[in-house]
Length: 248
Image (cartoon, rainbow, N blue to C red; front, side):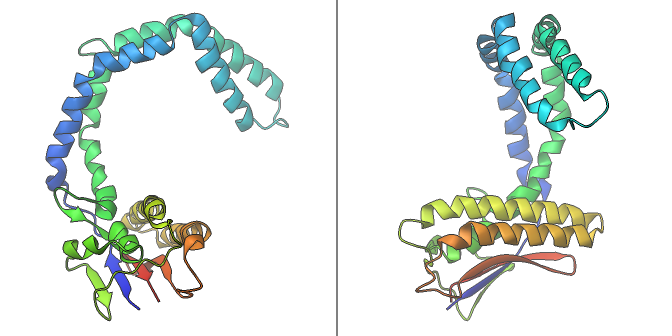
């Protein structure tokens, strides 16, 4: 039996500035490709009505309470306004994707916000630069990936000793890893946001929801006949977040 406990730590944003710059350069270099692909898919007013206007309206209908006053008229107004918006949309797309237009300005304006990836990378890691982080080390420890031990740091603890065991049903490990990573990362990032503004009650609600999702997905694939007490979950201790993984 081994239990892994890993502390979730947001990475220093200066570590990923090069990736931020690459994101910005790559996206701007693809401006014309993105525009051409969009206008190829929505080449005519008929395409616009079918793929954007009517499709959007179908989704919008679910957000309007039918008992709301004038709900029928609200839906009709929404539908007709969307269907008549092709000319404005087409002009807007061409202007936005012109050199120095809204697309370029948007990329520049959002570049520093890209550094919020520090929250995600604190969970997943960046293998070629800082290695794996807490979410992958947790699921790797109980899905047989011995490489996680190579990326151990002071935020990791394996007890009673470093050990890696696959507790999942045959063939499940490679599929359960990305599933666990997605669930854990979503929970850790949102809980960290909540803790950063001092909202512990919301952080605890997020942790509870994420653990429920792990119970209903990842843990359903554990070989409970061999590992009846295997587990993986998120826990809060004061303002810190931890991921536990156990192969008992």
